[in-house]
Amino acid sequence: MEIKAKKIWFDDSRIFAELNDGRMIGMPLTWFPRLEHATEQQRNNYELWNDGAWIHWEELDEDLSAEGFLSFSKGPIYKTA
Image 1 (tube, rainbow, N blue to C red):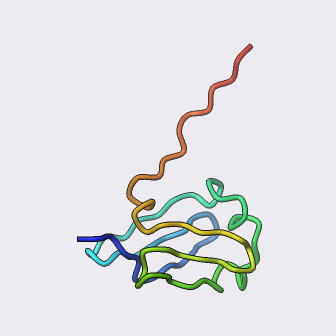
Image 2 (image 1 turned 180 degrees about the vertical axis):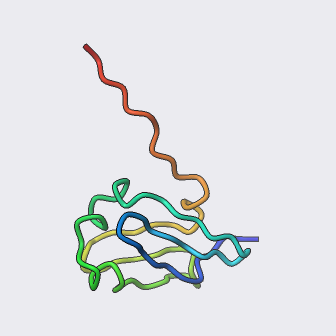
Image 3 (image 1 turned 90 degrees about the vertical axis):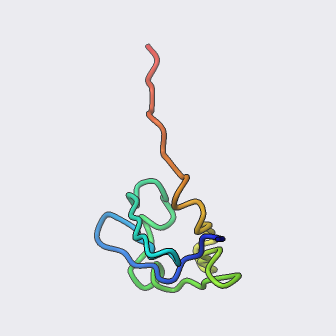
């Protein structure tokens, strides 16, 4: 089954997606600076493309794949001396 988003929503610090297999996934907005710095109106002005396979924010020039909600991970940040 291809993973698709049914619904996207936000709280003050996270983006959430309800997927077509029933899972609800949330990730920190800090991982997506364009979304983090957007207004509530801009965040909520998205389109589901390809029946929800992609989430697109025209005004913000931001695209996320529904599949990416399952595999995206912001790895550890290492500082070198």
